[in-house]
Image 1 (tube, one colour):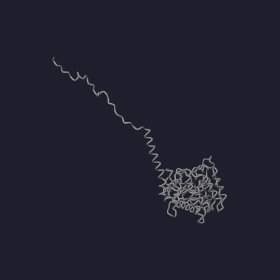
Image 2: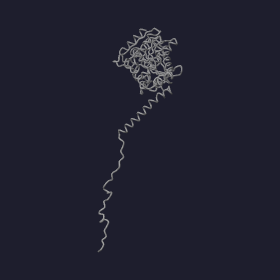
Image 3: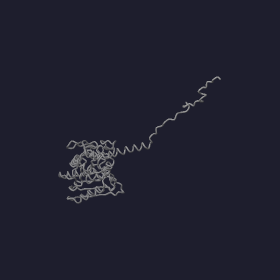
Length: 360
């Protein structure tokens, strides 16, 4: 019998291909992190960073007290950005810009706004004419603004307009280091700036009343200046305080920025005590005890920056001080919405000012 060769194909049958060119092999996929996980991770990182900053700031401030003065003065904030300070007519009429150099070589930028009644004769007049105009029969207000910004900030300009319409000369000062004034601010320096301008005006006003008007931070400057003027034997004719604080320590404790750290252990040590280390005090409560100048206090009860209780306290101190003089407090109800910087909206403001001056 003849043996037949049996092929491998016959023995094992048809082979099944392990991999067919027409069948794609399943790909292994690495699970991608979910979007929500990435967001949570980012938020966690932000929270840790903010917490670290929050904890570090008090220690940095304590080590470098000068940093806190930047917050107090905010002189690096030179707003509004697009107003030419040399051309005040862009924002307020009957106003000229000029510069004075104080005794310590600091150049101060100043706006002089005329009483509205002199508008017709002021056209095309120069600085010398404006300077001579201080000797007319209209009172003069030296306006000492709050921290941050320049003399061109809107609520300051609006007050200039109101005072001009009421018949006042208004000289608006940017302290050293503010706006286009040279130097760097300090409590002693900005106080000297106010005194320098007061004395400059007084020698030209020929007996017309010259009043120091301070707003917010400027109220501390006003009382400092008034006290020094009195010690020099030349008391201010009147002091007007708009939204005043008792002293800068109290103001810092109540300020919205300060409230962020109220719960921080050692808040007073790290912040309030540190201001004194950098010679920032502005003790209006102590100054008013010594002043003999007539005093007008204006405060809105809905002031969210400086509580009206401070204005009330200053009024009480003035009334009970050793120097009898004319003292008046005007409180504006919350429903008027004047807050910290809108008292200029009071339609009776000019009457209030004239009544105060006439009673001196």
